[in-house]
Figure 1 (cartoon, rainbow, N blue to C red):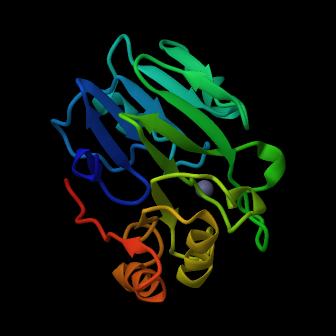
Figure 2 (figure 1 turned 135 degrees about the horizontal axis):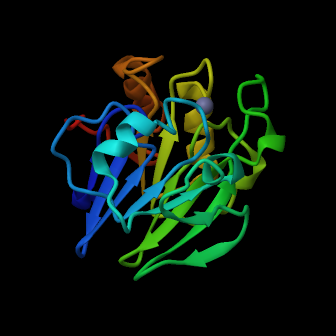
Amino acid sequence: MLSRIKWLGHDTFMIDYENKVIYFDPYKLKEGLPKADYIFITHSHYDHFSREDIDKIVKNDTVFIGPEDVISEIKENKTVLAEIGKESKLDGFSFKSIPAYNTNKEFHPKEKKWVGYIVDIGNVKIYHAGDTDRIPEMKNLNVDIALLPVSGTYVMTAEEAAEAAMDIKPDIAIPMHYASIVGSTKDAERFAELLKDKIQVKIMEKEG
Ligand SMILES: [Zn+2]
């Protein structure tokens, strides 16, 4: 499954699995990418919910998944509300919404009900954490692959993200949310170094 996951920079990932194309938080997309069957949006900040980028990959039957303040903005397409803790079935796979919020800063208040996602696809559970700090809900998530923000400032620092990874205990942790708006590859490398001999970390090459 790992080879089906592409990092397009910042928090943007694309999964291409069994003729389904799934995006998370499309932002700063290049032209010519495959159209989306599903677009998961974690929250309404411009670098996660970008109309300009959505327009590059949307088609008539694209389904959007997002929290209330995102879904209310989608008029032309089918939507599925991301309700925290609830598991929803889509065509051939399922997903669950996990809270995403700050604990030591104010950018992402818990009351907004913004989310991360666990997508269960091809018997692999992939957790996209969204913009979050290390939160108690991360314990015992039982996922195979965890995509975790590491830049600091708006989200966890590399050190906090490494502790979060130890809570989550995925088979593979992938750093995200760096080298675009805030953070650099140094944050990703520090994250990997802190988890050395504990959890396998894959620093992805940015595609596109
Ligand atoms: Zn944000």
